[in-house]
Length: 194
Image (cartoon, rainbow, N blue to C red; front, side, top):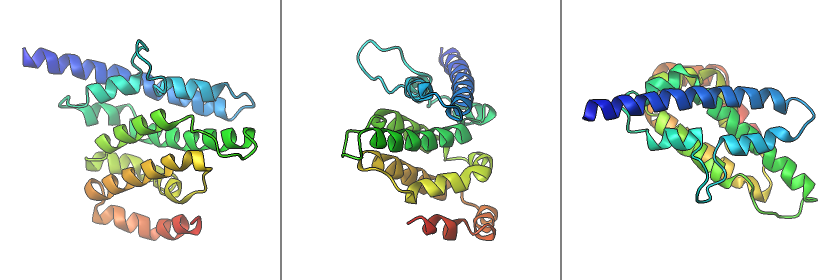
């Protein structure tokens, strides 16, 4: 019955979170190299191909199974929130490099679908203080994304980062976290980029 369905959802969440974590870590390492292959792998991993018949990505599986009772816990156990921040940062690099390859001419975004999925997943996760604590070392990267420079084709990444920051502020911002942000001058540093 319902218990088996929730247990099945939890198994799918756990497996997809682990696979997504491993995939992101591999791509982060590859992005440090000279090859551009990481860009295609990142878009594939995040389910950027939303055409009919495409196999569901790990992100799609997580989004579908997000009503699972232990969804956030299973994602936190697999370090998914910080890895999703890495994804947003990589998507920004991808859009910046894509714009340069197009000679700076306004082009179409290549990461809209992937960015939307990552943002949706992060917003679903940023409802528990445990996620806030896990994101603590990555907050500067998240905050910087909202005010960083983007080509016109990449502005959607800043919008998604802003949505995540709002969700984070609503559910994960404790007095301790506010002091952490203050002591590290994160807001001042974030607004330096604007």
